[in-house]
Length: 430
Image (cartoon, rainbow, N blue to C red):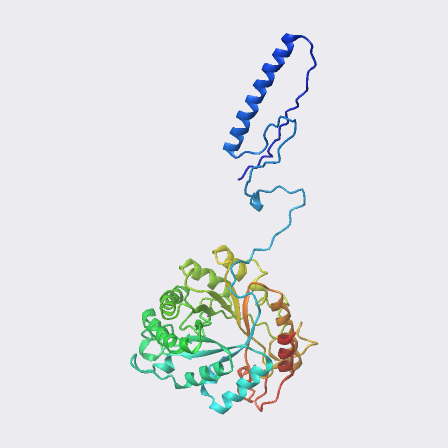
């Protein structure tokens, strides 16, 4: 606690005396000499101490004042009622908002002409970021001596030729690097050091081409993408190996934790807030530069409290943001690296009219998709704690209705634009 005292000023009033007796005149002279000596001595002391007011023979107070630092805000007593103060945002490298497309793993499988057409469509919308997977299981499928980069070279080259920034996701384990008894590429690596070696290869290859943003894994809090079940401790060990390896290869790199999926903690998957708190507890602080999040809310609008995935970023107790602040990471951002809504697939369809009440539906009309996107960007623009925003995805992957994964695009499979394409273009340019 700081105690702050008001400094007092003292004034010496000097009143002249009128006497005719010689003794009194002499006495007055002695008094004057004493006063002069006192004033000179006091003045000198005040200068030596650098103090404020000093006695002035003319009876005035000098304007000399002590130069004190201002009290910290917490020490100032105000007569105004106390108000809650937002958590300050400091040291943010890039306070501007920027927009991208999360393309997933399909971009690497496109021909050069197909890739050029899609990227031209993205650039026409105004996006400046592209997020996609660089899968370890494809680069080194059989052993650590292999390196198959051609598919990823193509994507990086096409993006950078259009001045599009790349956020590369390093993920998915080849069979030779998986733990015993785990048979999926989504298994966490058996040895984080082997993953770190792969990460170094990727950074050495693409940093010279202008790739300086890296995401360590995709949705590690979900059983689907970290098998056999989500493991915050194992993921933290991966971060601790990958982070210094990437920074050593590229000191300019920005490294994101793996995008968090909207999940419940159920023994196999871990909720986003629980997972972030767990990795902090495991020592992840200092091993990521930003938090990556996937706050999907479809079929509802992002601000709808029925599905709290969006609000869990900053307004719930706790929130991702509050956990970051509590762990000393107030200056780091949350990158929204996936957000979207599918317009087809199995089950019933949510519409703008029934989206607040509909249940058991996993896709929306094209109009509702555009509404969800518009509302998400409106909210995003009001935040100062966010990094880039990525819509998942650019183009529908197919037309069969057996999966919603075919219909997240802003562009239909035949190349025609959905309403959300024009909406994204408009809100980016506003």
